[in-house]
Image 1: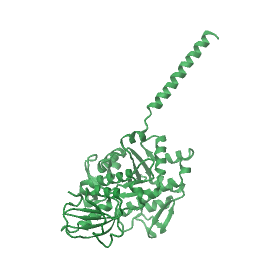
Image 2 (image 1 turned 180 degrees about the vertical axis):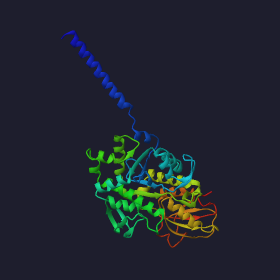
Image 3 (image 1 turned 180 degrees about the horizontal axis):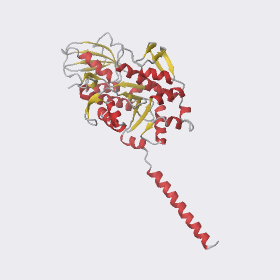
Image 4 (image 1 turned 60 degrees about the horizontal axis):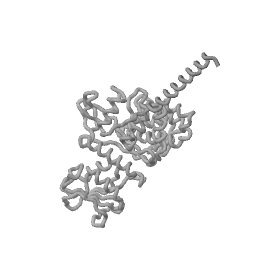
Amino acid sequence: MSKDKRSAIFLLAILAIIAALTVTIAISLKVDPISETMKNDPVIKILFIHTDDEKNVLSTDIFVYCPGSDQAVSFNILGNTGAIFKSINRVDRIDAVYKELGVDAYRDEIEKLVGKQIPFTVEYSMSDLEFFADYLGGLNVFVPMPVDEIGPDGEKWLLPSGAVSLDGDKIRIFETYKLPSENEGDVEDRRQAVFAALLAAFRENKKSVYSPKNFPVFAKRFTTNIDYDNFYRLMKQVSDIETERIVLQTITGSSRTVESGQTLLFPLYDGQLIKDVMNQSISSLMTGDYGNQNRAYVLVIQNGTSTQGLARNTSFLMQSAGYEVLETSNAPATEKTVIINHVGNSEAAKALGNFIRCTNIVDDDFSYESSGSAQADFTIVLGKDFDGRIVR
């Protein structure tokens, strides 16, 4: 072999080694955002933002789950949630931030609202939703009453009643119609139901959706802040969750009309309730508490104080945290708030106590009777140490 050939082979070998090292270094330096997130947080949080085709927010859901678990919780952030938003320097609806400044500023404001970092964002439009509904064979929702109306722009609103599977055109109507008797919350409830139906459809069709041939078709319909491979992993994990075990939450507040003439929903207790509900739900996910039952825990709330309406107001508080309130009533006057555990579930009782900061938890000895206690999981007797939010 000539000297020139040996030199050429040697040079090619060096180039091959350099190329291999370059690929190895690139792979080692590639960041896995899901694994990186889980180093500091045992749950994954995704902000799903659904818009119309003009980029106005229709619904926003914070989806929270533990990888490897079959349970999750989804928080619906109402578009008319009001506050002084520093990013736009005024009191307004929270979805105005998205319209004016985009997804990053919107996520920042929602993170401040709930007190948690949300590393992943997923956006999709109404046209994208219609595509998903058609491609997946319809989205299953419940329509309580048949709809046969004419919209403000002359469009025909026509929907059957009952548990139905809606195609793209019908799902658009389901999300956008609003009857005179309805408020914005009713429309938001339907949109949250559609979000749950979309996740269910992805799960039911996951063999087809996540095939190498089909997933790119779905992926291009979403806008996300992670690369294709990690988005595939993320959505695949979401679709492994049993949709019947996704707990749907709605952030609540009190409505007030502001100077601009808008009626906004201001979070209760200066926003602390939202943070507490988020913490409570994440704690339940981590302990598997949501998975123990396919229903919300049922409460009886009794007022052992002279404060009128305390039990009723507390029922709204507990419902916002995902509990079902069977009954509110009065009780003999008491100094200390107590939680009576009717079902012997100490972990669930402790989680309930943590939410209102009550450590006075007792097992049922049948000394606290009410018409609903036989059907309730827990009874809360409110004492003078309860300030309307927590036990002091």
